[in-house]
Image 1 (tube, rainbow, N blue to C red):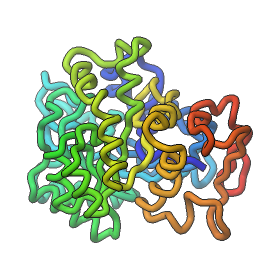
Image 2 (image 1 turned 180 degrees about the vertical axis):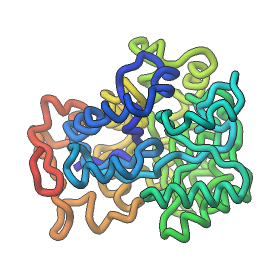
Image 3 (image 1 turned 135 degrees about the vertical axis):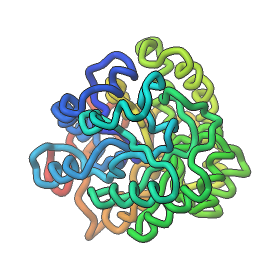
Amino acid sequence: GLFDNHVHVTSVAGESDLTKTVIMPKTTALMRVRYTLEASLARGFTTLRDCGGAEGYIKAAIVEGSIIGPRLITCGHAISQTGGHGDMRSPQLPGSAFDSCSCHMNDLGVVADGIDECYRTAREEFRRGADFIKIMGSGGVASPTDKISNLQFCDDEITALVKVANTYHSYVTAHAYTPESIQNCIKHGVKGIEHGNLLDEETAELMAQLGCYLTPTLVAYKIMASDQFSSFLSGENRLKNTQVLYKGIEALQIAQKKNVKICYGSDLLGSLGGYQTQEFFIRGKVQSAQQVLLSATVTPAQMNGLDDKLGQVKPGFIADLLMMNSNPLDDISILDEPETNLLFVMKEGRIY
């Protein structure tokens, strides 16, 4: 079974642009989430790590069989500072305008400022069933009020979030693009970096030295830059996407060269989700088939403390298996063609 280490399953299809996708009412998103999960399983993904949006009750519904989908590893909400990458509130309105309606919004993130709020917010996510903590360590393509070059959270806030995760025997992963933001996070105990498109050799060496994991999500930028989805991003966000798009492959090559542990990720929001497998095709241009396959099986299982159960075909492991017409070790791009190459998907010994 395949393992996508960066998804947002509650960011569901149905809207034509990012703004409408983000402000979709929570009830609407939850009525559609089953289709996102079923489609991902049909592509061969038996495990997903949700990096913001999926709460414990969705994970529980899959376990009990109320809905069909891959097993979920969740962080609850990504934690952001005010005005950070996870703060999707309109800059035209004060924060207080959202206080009474936040429970009705399909939020991928939650805001925390200061050490006390970081402690409380991280503990609240764990209380509600989170397996790990996701934070925003830099600005992002999709957010309305920050630059990619911005650092987010102060040193003491990052340390506080890492301390909480450590008490739960878990870890913190961080959305970060620039060498400065990546180093700012991993030097304070963060174990995972999401995206990392502007990674340089010095930072990659430090990641390898500290045993950190990188989850590139190259397909997200490619699809958002495509003519087909030209209306998904607008104005400044489209320019930011171009900024990181062409550096992503170079960052992946640097990480591979410096022996950074690399995981497979897609990070496709809303209607873009159907291109989840195209990450295999993109990575196959610069990585061997075995390197790509390890990133979608063994390595993310290791990152999430499941390497004694998932990621290998071995006695005592969970029976997540794919039967295919062709061998992906001969041509990794066949994993981008599940309609013709995937004969069946087995999860936990059951053929779906």
